[in-house]
Each structure stands twice: as structure tokens, then as C-alpha cells.
Length: 225
Image (tube, rainbow, N blue to C red; front, side):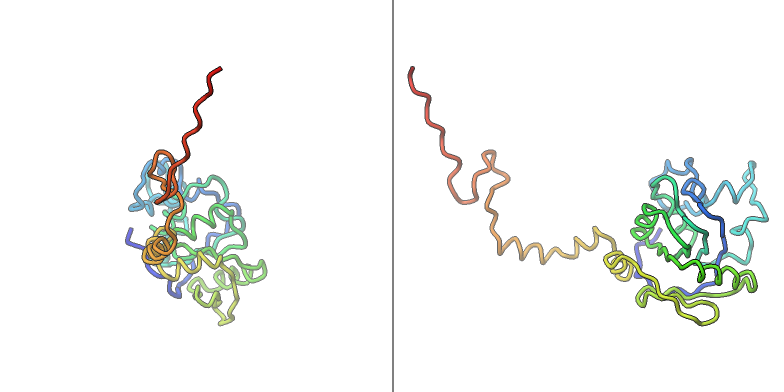
């Protein structure tokens, strides 16, 4: 998978997968967890639903329909991402090409993992979600726009609905970085702070002596009894 990219407004038709309580084992089955490389995980996304026992695609499954190719927004049901904390779940969704998931609720750990892996979970009110599901049923080519900077979802009828994202996670997505990248970018500030605040304790000294000062005083010898 490519290096993180800043999250821009995403306009896309939807992939409707409206089942509730889709857990991470359904998103990416456990047999795919042996890998530590994100590349290729898209093939394992919803594998037990996408393929039969012989590995042949199931024609009726939504991701196998030709018109779904290239769509970047998944319309999911309630409590999406329940189950184990496997980070491979957002990895697989991103590897397949999804940038955002719309649902009425998300499992907390999945939400956190998604935000750290360039995948935007957008929680919608039940009435908005129901209207969006109806719009997609009426017109499978209905399109939405997910604008993270504005924290707004534009529905097929042009209505804009607000959503909120953790401020720090939002910043990381907009800047196309992560926590490590953020810390590395603070290198000059850290160096300046350290220069302005000399250490009071020499952590390299076996005695833990104060930097530039005397070490701990020698304890008095025991007196003769």
C-alpha cells in the first residue's frame, strides 16, 4: 500500500452492505492475520462472503458486482466492526479501495484503528442512514460526498449533514500522517526545548547524578562497636 496521503473530499457512489453487527472476523477472516504487510489484503476482504468453498466468487455478493468496482464509500449497518481488535480489518478495507464507511454506529476499537489507517468512519443519525439506504435502493448509482475538512456529508439530494471526528485524528488524516509522523515532524521543536531546558538528572550516569553537579554523597562509615 502507498504512503499515507492527505484526506481530500471524496465523491463516490456507494457500496451498500446494510447488515448489522458485521464483526472483524467477517471483514477479514482470521486466516489472513498471519501477514504483516497490508498489500494484497483487499483480496481477503469479506472473503467468506465473497467466495465459495472452492474459491470462486459468489455472483450475488455486492462486492462481486462489476458496477461496484472503484467505489470508495461503504454504506454499512449498525455496530460495524464489532468483535476482535484486529487492525487488519481497516487494512483490508483500505486495500480494497474504501476511504470512508457510513454507519449508525461503530465498535470503539474498530473506529480507533480505522482513523489510524486512512479510513474515515462516519456515524450517521438513524433517520439520515435510513434515507440514504432508501436513496441507494431507488438509484444504485446515487452519489455522496464526504468532506472531512468541513465535517459534512452531502447526500444524493444535495442535503449536507454534519458529522464529528476526533480533532487530533482529523488533523492526522487531513495532513496525511500518523502519530509517529507527527512526532517526527516536531524534531526541531524538541531540540529547541531540550536546549532551553538542560537536564537536571544525567540518565546515563550509573549514579543518576545531577548533570554538571556532584554525585550522591558517600554514606558515613559505620562506627566501631
